[in-house]
Image 1 (cartoon, one colour):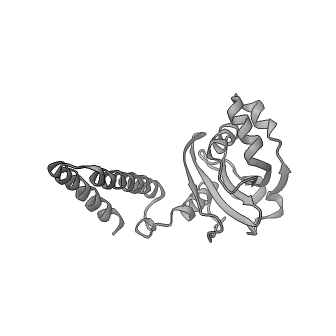
Image 2: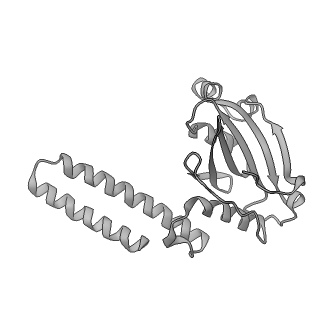
Length: 208
């Protein structure tokens, strides 16, 4: 994908893996993951007031775009946590494995990573880099990963909160369904099913 960003935002700078070793205290296991899973890290773009002419805010001063070339078609989430700890900005990731591409983004607040959003390999996605400030641009980027119809018109914070709630309910439903299958006592199955129906109803009220 061509991001169609101003030339001033284009960095295209190779970042040595050792830079992350120096900035964070990595154990041998994580260092080995960097070596075995990542082929190359490239800082592709810097979205800042001086590069794209859009004002920063207190919470979003810059947005970075990184290309991560992988040695296997698996997104190394543990390594992303290391990168985000070392870099105090919001990051949009483009993962590359052979001819396949996937995207991820950090939900970061006050330099603390709260969550990651990912797209499947070669899944279509469109990014909108317009906005009155960098925070609005960042929110649009995150929303491109959520794409739940029921949440489209919500304000950003509410959209994130509801998305977290949906994921939590989906996990609870999955766990309860597994419990029902394993449970041998009929009365116990009935009790679990009551809770399951309650969780499903709660989920349907959010996503309807």
